[in-house]
Amino acid sequence: MSTPLSDERLAEIRERADSPHDAVSCGKDCWRLAHEDVPALLVEVERLRAVVARARDMHWRFDIYDICGCREHEDEAATVTLSDGEVVCRSGYQYSICHECCAPGDSQTEECVDNHDHSECWPCPTRKALDESPALAVSPA
Image 1: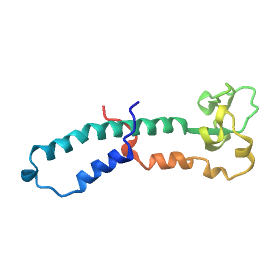
Image 2: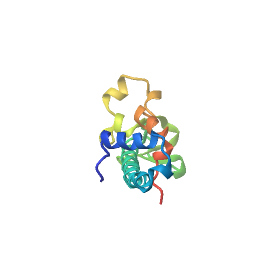
Image 3: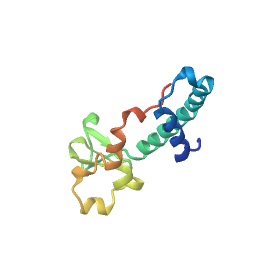
Image 4: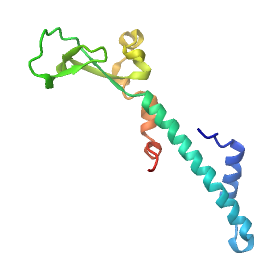
């Protein structure tokens, strides 16, 4: 992965972008500096997209179901296979949580089960913030 652009480098690029200039009076140096900034900025955008993709991959929806206790399920379409291999009735769906925040290791934490309103579990604040930035979601092909 590439090294992030430093605050100083970003400030230099921003200063050049914000300063008014006349291409005729600046000559080639004016355009060359701006042209040299483009590759660094594109690398930075790709780096940030990769970071966002990794965070999205960590914060995914994990559905919680009641254990039904059925010995057999006649309609396989009405069932869900849980991460531990147990098959339960789809109608036993209770709520969704964030795997990273509330169910690390494929098991819901005691804190999540007992100490808060599950309507706030999905999307979690991290995933919600990431989803509000769709431009960073996928790198161009």
